[in-house]
Length: 171
Ligand SMILES: Nc1ncnc2c1ncn2[C@@H]1O[C@H](COP(=O)(O)OP(=O)(O)OP(=O)(O)O)[C@@H](O)[C@H]1O
Ligand SMILES: [Mg+2]
Image 1 (cartoon, rainbow, N blue to C red):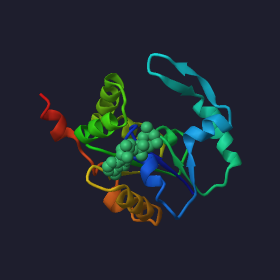
Image 2 (cartoon, rainbow, N blue to C red):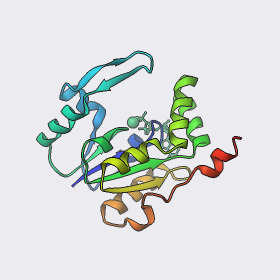
Image 3 (cartoon, rainbow, N blue to C red):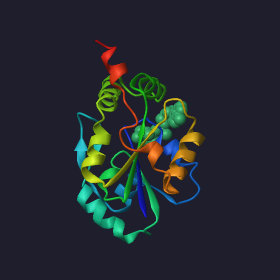
Image 4 (cartoon, protein in one colour):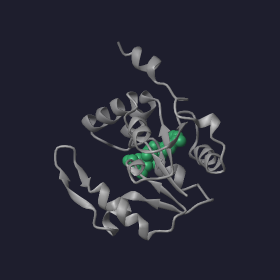
Protein backbone atom coordinates (compact mmCIF):
# COMPACT_ATOMS: atom_id res chain seq x y z
CA UNK A 1 0.00 0.00 0.00
CA UNK A 2 1.20 3.49 -0.85
CA UNK A 3 0.41 6.15 1.75
CA UNK A 4 1.03 9.81 0.96
CA UNK A 5 1.71 12.04 3.97
CA UNK A 6 1.15 15.49 2.60
CA UNK A 7 0.23 19.01 3.69
CA UNK A 8 1.24 22.65 3.43
CA UNK A 9 4.97 23.28 3.95
CA UNK A 10 5.72 23.55 7.69
CA UNK A 11 2.84 21.45 9.02
CA UNK A 12 5.31 18.86 10.29
CA UNK A 13 5.37 16.06 7.70
CA UNK A 14 9.09 15.29 7.99
CA UNK A 15 9.08 15.54 11.81
CA UNK A 16 6.14 13.15 12.18
CA UNK A 17 7.27 10.66 9.53
CA UNK A 18 10.70 10.34 11.14
CA UNK A 19 8.85 8.71 14.07
CA UNK A 20 6.68 6.29 12.07
CA UNK A 21 7.93 2.73 12.43
CA UNK A 22 5.43 0.47 10.67
CA UNK A 23 6.40 1.32 7.07
CA UNK A 24 9.48 2.63 5.26
CA UNK A 25 9.36 6.36 4.60
CA UNK A 26 10.39 7.77 1.24
CA UNK A 27 11.05 11.52 1.10
CA UNK A 28 9.62 12.78 -2.16
CA UNK A 29 12.17 15.60 -2.35
CA UNK A 30 14.98 13.00 -2.47
CA UNK A 31 13.17 11.16 -5.26
CA UNK A 32 13.15 14.27 -7.43
CA UNK A 33 16.97 14.09 -7.57
CA UNK A 34 17.15 10.29 -7.75
CA UNK A 35 14.81 10.09 -10.74
CA UNK A 36 15.93 13.36 -12.33
CA UNK A 37 12.39 14.71 -12.18
CA UNK A 38 13.10 18.44 -11.73
CA UNK A 39 11.68 20.25 -14.75
CA UNK A 40 12.85 23.77 -13.92
CA UNK A 41 13.16 26.42 -11.25
CA UNK A 42 10.51 28.93 -10.29
CA UNK A 43 12.67 31.96 -9.48
CA UNK A 44 9.77 34.04 -8.21
CA UNK A 45 8.65 31.41 -5.70
CA UNK A 46 12.19 30.09 -5.12
CA UNK A 47 11.11 26.48 -5.59
CA UNK A 48 11.91 23.67 -7.98
CA UNK A 49 9.33 22.76 -10.59
CA UNK A 50 8.75 19.03 -10.69
CA UNK A 51 7.58 16.75 -13.48
CA UNK A 52 4.96 14.95 -11.38
CA UNK A 53 3.99 12.54 -14.17
CA UNK A 54 7.60 11.41 -14.62
CA UNK A 55 8.02 11.05 -10.86
CA UNK A 56 4.81 9.01 -10.50
CA UNK A 57 6.01 6.69 -13.29
CA UNK A 58 9.43 6.27 -11.65
CA UNK A 59 7.79 5.23 -8.39
CA UNK A 60 6.87 1.87 -9.91
CA UNK A 61 10.57 0.97 -9.38
CA UNK A 62 10.11 1.20 -5.60
CA UNK A 63 8.59 -1.30 -3.17
CA UNK A 64 4.85 -1.03 -3.05
CA UNK A 65 4.59 -0.62 0.73
CA UNK A 66 5.83 2.87 1.49
CA UNK A 67 4.97 6.20 2.98
CA UNK A 68 5.58 8.98 0.47
CA UNK A 69 6.38 12.08 2.50
CA UNK A 70 6.23 15.51 0.88
CA UNK A 71 3.97 18.43 0.02
CA UNK A 72 2.89 17.05 -3.38
CA UNK A 73 2.96 13.32 -2.52
CA UNK A 74 -0.84 13.24 -2.95
CA UNK A 75 -0.21 13.75 -6.70
CA UNK A 76 1.84 10.54 -6.97
CA UNK A 77 -1.12 8.15 -7.18
CA UNK A 78 -1.14 6.86 -3.59
CA UNK A 79 -3.85 4.52 -2.27
CA UNK A 80 -4.43 6.78 0.74
CA UNK A 81 -3.57 10.44 1.31
CA UNK A 82 -3.08 11.68 4.87
CA UNK A 83 -3.20 15.47 4.91
CA UNK A 84 -1.49 17.01 7.94
CA UNK A 85 -3.16 20.25 8.95
CA UNK A 86 -2.13 23.10 11.25
CA UNK A 87 -4.11 26.13 12.36
CA UNK A 88 -2.97 29.08 10.19
CA UNK A 89 -1.81 31.18 13.18
CA UNK A 90 0.29 28.32 14.59
CA UNK A 91 1.63 27.48 11.12
CA UNK A 92 2.79 31.08 10.78
CA UNK A 93 4.81 30.67 14.00
CA UNK A 94 6.31 27.35 12.83
CA UNK A 95 7.37 28.90 9.51
CA UNK A 96 8.83 32.00 11.21
CA UNK A 97 10.91 29.69 13.40
CA UNK A 98 12.16 28.02 10.20
CA UNK A 99 13.42 31.46 9.10
CA UNK A 100 11.28 31.73 5.95
CA UNK A 101 10.72 35.13 4.35
CA UNK A 102 7.41 36.88 4.96
CA UNK A 103 6.04 36.49 1.45
CA UNK A 104 6.54 32.75 1.44
CA UNK A 105 5.06 32.46 4.94
CA UNK A 106 1.98 34.40 3.87
CA UNK A 107 1.54 32.30 0.73
CA UNK A 108 1.61 29.07 2.74
CA UNK A 109 -0.56 30.33 5.62
CA UNK A 110 -3.19 31.40 3.08
CA UNK A 111 -2.98 28.04 1.29
CA UNK A 112 -3.53 26.24 4.60
CA UNK A 113 -6.43 28.55 5.51
CA UNK A 114 -8.33 27.69 2.32
CA UNK A 115 -7.56 23.93 2.27
CA UNK A 116 -5.48 23.94 -0.95
CA UNK A 117 -3.73 20.61 -0.34
CA UNK A 118 -6.86 18.94 1.03
CA UNK A 119 -8.87 19.91 -2.07
CA UNK A 120 -6.08 18.67 -4.39
CA UNK A 121 -5.93 15.40 -2.44
CA UNK A 122 -9.71 14.94 -2.70
CA UNK A 123 -9.49 15.55 -6.45
CA UNK A 124 -6.74 12.97 -6.93
CA UNK A 125 -7.04 10.25 -4.27
CA UNK A 126 -9.97 7.97 -3.41
CA UNK A 127 -9.19 7.67 0.31
CA UNK A 128 -8.32 10.92 2.11
CA UNK A 129 -7.78 11.51 5.84
CA UNK A 130 -6.76 14.63 7.77
CA UNK A 131 -4.89 15.00 11.06
CA UNK A 132 -5.01 18.27 12.99
CA UNK A 133 -1.42 18.68 14.26
CA UNK A 134 -1.99 22.07 15.92
CA UNK A 135 -1.89 20.75 19.50
CA UNK A 136 -0.10 17.47 18.84
CA UNK A 137 3.56 16.67 19.36
CA UNK A 138 5.33 15.01 16.39
CA UNK A 139 5.14 11.66 18.25
CA UNK A 140 1.36 12.01 18.60
CA UNK A 141 1.03 12.84 14.90
CA UNK A 142 3.13 9.75 14.09
CA UNK A 143 0.78 7.65 16.28
CA UNK A 144 -2.25 9.02 14.40
CA UNK A 145 -0.56 8.11 11.08
CA UNK A 146 0.06 4.57 12.42
CA UNK A 147 -3.62 4.34 13.47
CA UNK A 148 -4.76 5.34 9.97
CA UNK A 149 -2.40 2.78 8.39
CA UNK A 150 -3.88 0.17 10.73
CA UNK A 151 -7.34 1.01 9.36
CA UNK A 152 -8.70 3.44 11.94
CA UNK A 153 -10.11 5.98 9.51
CA UNK A 154 -13.39 7.31 10.93
CA UNK A 155 -11.84 9.76 13.40
CA UNK A 156 -9.64 11.18 10.65
CA UNK A 157 -12.03 11.37 7.69
CA UNK A 158 -11.58 14.35 5.35
CA UNK A 159 -13.76 17.15 6.71
CA UNK A 160 -12.82 16.77 10.38
CA UNK A 161 -10.64 19.91 10.29
CA UNK A 162 -12.14 23.37 9.81
CA UNK A 163 -10.30 26.72 9.94
CA UNK A 164 -13.31 28.84 8.93
CA UNK A 165 -13.84 30.31 12.42
CA UNK A 166 -10.20 31.39 12.66
CA UNK A 167 -10.27 32.79 9.11
CA UNK A 168 -13.51 34.73 9.76
CA UNK A 169 -11.90 36.31 12.83
CA UNK A 170 -9.38 38.01 10.49
CA UNK A 171 -12.12 40.27 9.07
N1 LIG B 1 3.75 18.65 15.85
C1 LIG B 1 4.54 19.73 15.93
N2 LIG B 1 4.37 20.62 16.91
C2 LIG B 1 5.16 21.72 16.97
N3 LIG B 1 6.14 22.03 16.09
C3 LIG B 1 6.34 21.16 15.10
C4 LIG B 1 5.54 19.96 14.95
N4 LIG B 1 5.98 19.31 13.86
C5 LIG B 1 6.98 20.06 13.35
N5 LIG B 1 7.20 21.15 14.09
C6 LIG B 1 8.20 22.20 13.81
O1 LIG B 1 7.69 22.92 12.68
C7 LIG B 1 8.72 23.14 11.71
C8 LIG B 1 8.34 22.45 10.41
O2 LIG B 1 8.38 21.03 10.58
P1 LIG B 1 8.77 20.06 9.39
O3 LIG B 1 10.05 20.49 8.76
O4 LIG B 1 8.65 18.68 9.91
O5 LIG B 1 7.57 20.39 8.37
P2 LIG B 1 7.34 19.86 6.90
O6 LIG B 1 5.87 19.68 6.76
O7 LIG B 1 8.19 18.66 6.63
O8 LIG B 1 7.81 21.10 6.02
P3 LIG B 1 8.37 21.11 4.49
O9 LIG B 1 7.19 20.88 3.59
O10 LIG B 1 8.93 22.49 4.33
O11 LIG B 1 9.41 20.04 4.37
C9 LIG B 1 10.00 22.62 12.33
O12 LIG B 1 10.67 23.73 12.92
C10 LIG B 1 9.54 21.63 13.38
O13 LIG B 1 10.45 21.54 14.45
MG1 LIG C 1 9.72 18.34 5.22
